[in-house]
Length: 368
Image 1 (tube, one colour):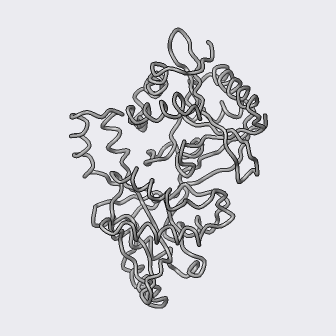
Image 2: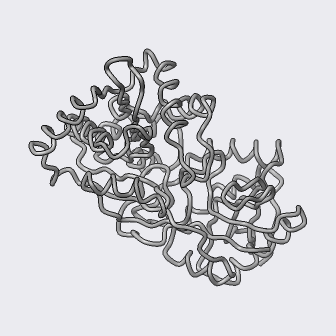
């Protein structure tokens, strides 16, 4: 076994395809869209050189891989922190140790004193952490999935828990809509509010309103900065194929139209991606069109309410609006998250809507 630093497109193609044999016929494994991932890696690793890709190779085969970069950490108050992602490895502590050792050596040469992961490039709110509990549940779109032994590989090399994030499941077959609806109506009437789905024909206005809500609602608990308006434009642009207007709800005040809350969910397109097997061609596109209409689960990825209206039932009202959208589309399962473990208010709001913690993801860190 030897560790290699990847600097050619051919090597990056092997990087992209490495998980296929690792996961084999695992029913929950969802491959990345290979073409898109390769395009991203070519930009980050070969052109910009802002990320480094490593692999452990034996007899021409990749047994482990990792992608990492350097950046500031608001949480740790560091100007130079290492971040890694796309970690995959066979169940072998020696193999994992070789990979981590070389990553740490390179980062230390760059002046890094601390490294943590896993994070996803460009978006630290999704696929953050490795899965440590909840392997019996299928992975939702933009969340991590990995073998249970990854925890031992990390801790065996000296990584320690930095923090956990959680996901909560809501099963709508037990949702008492008749009891909830009058309560929601009372909340909206009391505070002169209304909830409506996103309007893709007036998307600029909706982006402005969502940005206003997030900026006002972001607290110190969420250690990352609130996304800029440009970030939201980019997210909508990148995700436009995966967004359904009736799963983006904005709560506004009737008197002046002021936005006070937002909740956004993404249909669990993993159902579709699994059928496409990471490939984009005429056959898989036909499969995608067919399976898109059979999605039965959804992931809530964003919920904010401005301070003035927190703890007044607005969160509850937003969840009820989502229930109504789910009912129309025949969706009976929602997973909310991932939420930082110390964000007790957000966790409690989901629990009030019937949610129960079903998955735990862990960010690991290590002093260099």
